[in-house]
Image 1: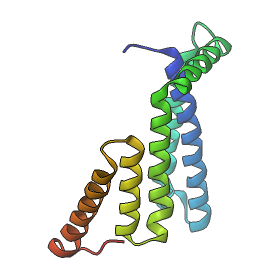
Image 2 (image 1 turned 180 degrees about the horizontal axis):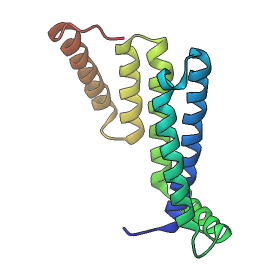
Image 3 (image 1 turned 30 degrees about the vertical axis):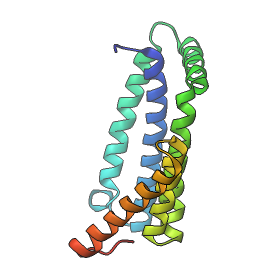
Image 4 (image 1 turned 45 degrees about the vertical axis):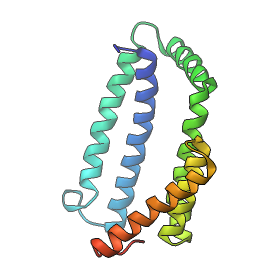
Length: 159
């Protein structure tokens, strides 16, 4: 895999947005703490966000060199359209959505063991990994083993 300008364009664009979000968060931290910047907890995120911004802008400039922004944007859009049509993309997106629902909703609403059991059943059923009764057995055994290991063996409370 060599130098792929369309992928560099996509990566640099996303990293630029991320670095701007980090810098905005750093400004928010600095405003809330009301300390001088050199002693503020906002200093490290500001430095890292600034370094990421510089690096992503350099990558952006390098990716559009030669063909221009418009041509590279068209290449990137056509490539992304092909990726969106690929069947594996649907599987990846649904898997990510299931993980997000588990992380941001289920764990906060239900007990750990119940949220984990629902997630394991949903993920194994979606992937059609095994027959339905094995989905239940594997999910229950896995969650049960995790709960016993952490709460009994390690004496660590689960959320």
